[in-house]
Length: 237
Ligand code: B1M
Image (cartoon, rainbow, N blue to C red; front, side, top):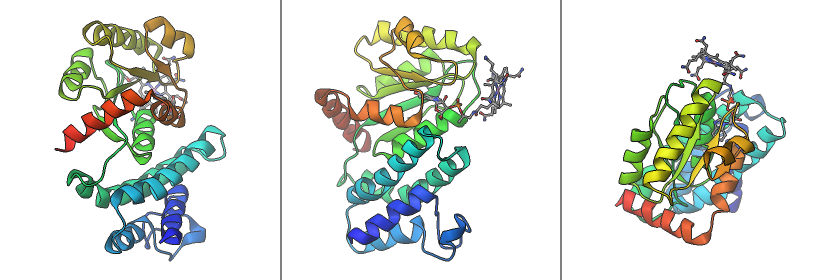
């Protein structure tokens, strides 16, 4: 089965969605993420193994290539589409509770800001790397973030902003959330955001790209990760 898991990782990395998909041209006519995921599950491979050995591997590779400017947004979107196609088959199995995910990440573009392409890329990359993701969408205010924290304590929050004018709202959200939930971990990103700004507003982490967010989540203290897993487990129960 290792070869099949490897093949699925390649489908994700190169954005091969299914057999009829013409992209990428050099994989035309071959099985894609949809067919290979089905084969793996029918053969009895655990959903968590498919996630870890195929989806995470493929998404990590594309994330690194994107950071190094070796691929661009369209290729990442195709990889994310292949990953989502596979995830559609895995999600019901995660919901059954036999398979665990690494934690829970809640993301939104901040109040006043409607840009969602970068935020969606971050969400897809984080999901493809083994986390449960709740996407609150765009124009999300502090109350909406706090409402979600109430429902899913110990999630990590991700705030995205694309406008210099909405960075101010990012600051407001971080302050309000941290005032009510001082332990809440918050990471920030988006084109106008930088490390200095992150420190100034009291957020926990600035990451310039989706892969950075994945690495931040993966490197969190073990006790926080455990809480994340517990929280994620509560979510599926
Ligand atoms: Co807008 N826009 N836009 N826009 N727009 C920019 C951002 C702008 C730089 C264009 C310009 O003037 N050159 C400019 C901002 C200027 C500034 O503030 N300094 C701008 C403006 C001014 C505006 C309006 C105000 C225009 C107007 O109406 N007068 C308006 C605002 C609307 C609003 O939000 N209230 C507006 C509207 C729009 C559209 C609706 C037309 C459209 C958005 C469509 C959509 O998102 N569904 C749009 C677009 C497409 C852009 C540009 C062209 C592209 C943005 C984009 O998607 N980039 C942009 C100019 C540009 O960047 N060339 C521009 C691709 C995306 C993959 O990158 O989002 O940076 P990005 O995400 C990256 C990283 O930043 C990071 O990872 C992603 C992948 O690497 N990242 C995170 C993002 N979030 C992260 C979170 C993290 C970590 C990393 O942790 C949580």
